[in-house]
Image 1 (tube, rainbow, N blue to C red):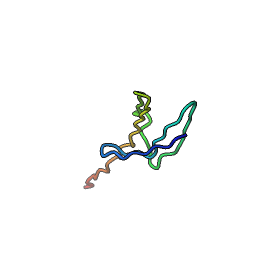
Image 2 (image 1 turned 90 degrees about the vertical axis):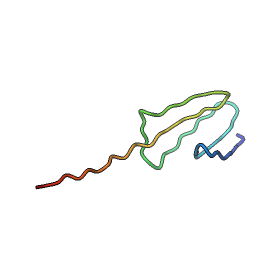
Image 3 (image 1 turned 45 degrees about the vertical axis):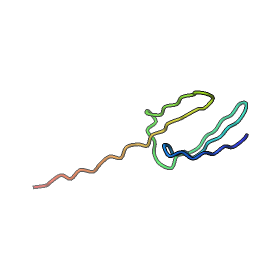
Image 4 (image 1 turned 90 degrees about the horizontal axis):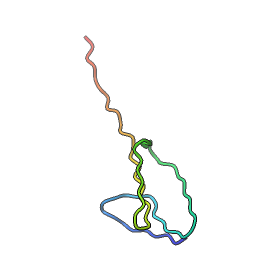
Length: 65
């Protein structure tokens, strides 16, 4: 493995790695994620995975008369 880290103004990421051969990685997210909206693409040897957070439900006030 050859770790590689780059900063970007456009995106935030927890981990950026580069390896040769078979590779697997698993990790836990600090917040809930929307599993149905996860997308991934592989282009020019780079795997990008977008994992959006679950949108918070807004509270609503109901007047009681």
